[in-house]
View 1: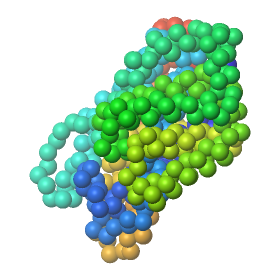
View 2 (view 1 turned 60 degrees about the vertical axis):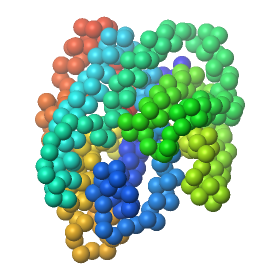
View 3 (view 1 turned 60 degrees about the horizontal axis):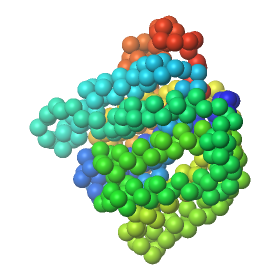
View 4 (view 1 turned 180 degrees about the vertical axis):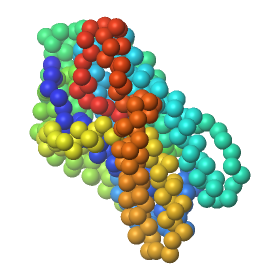
Length: 372
């Protein structure tokens, strides 16, 4: 059983959220930005689409994988009542608060920028991710706690560990993702938000994220040894997507490419990022609130910076800087220091330990502060 703290998963989650922010900012400079509700720059940077197109097939599934992995660590020293209470405070409360108070803000900015009539409506926006996680937790909590009760030497766990001890083990899971794509037939593979495809793809990633960590050290040793192979295969499929298919790639190849990128990133993280540090502690705690408020910061930055008479490249850089700076200032000056605000953004609150004690045994410290 894996018992040590996994700093690489913390790092990868934090980096993935940072990439998510930059990806969303890049959308502002694409011709189709307004079709998905983003403020659009009059001057475009369509060259950004090349790295964006590489990211968009795996960035969201990766976060679901990491969330499933985080659940494994979270339940190791919790009973089901403690776990559900902690998930409720960490996911459901921020999701509900964000639905009512955060996502309408960037809608107001959008309406103001385009001189539209101001109108209020509650919608999940980018927080759809949290809504999906809430559902996945309820679906899989019986299975996860059943698996938790199985001893390390159980035949299932030992067999799973042996299966993951070769490069085909982690790779074989892609069959389930290919089946999802073929059955659901998404019009756009990277359209995850509030779609049937996004729901089932996220559910599979969440489940197998848990299973991968549950399988033991052999999974990570395999990724550490074979990440170069996965990288070469992912790069080959991406090249094929750009050159042969002209971005109209069959869904089964997109599913395979997505899975290979994810295995590559997990292998690199395990090999090079499993290191603690003050920066990681701060960024890991702040990543969740930053994720929640980043769309408002992005829209506000776009509204202020896009009308300026500046080169479009400089506008992109300034919006990136504004978004990150605004988010971290709000986190540092308000969310981190005002207790009730921290609770609304999923941070640990003062009476949480006592409540956890009432629900079971002494509460465990989170091994991974996953984005849930």
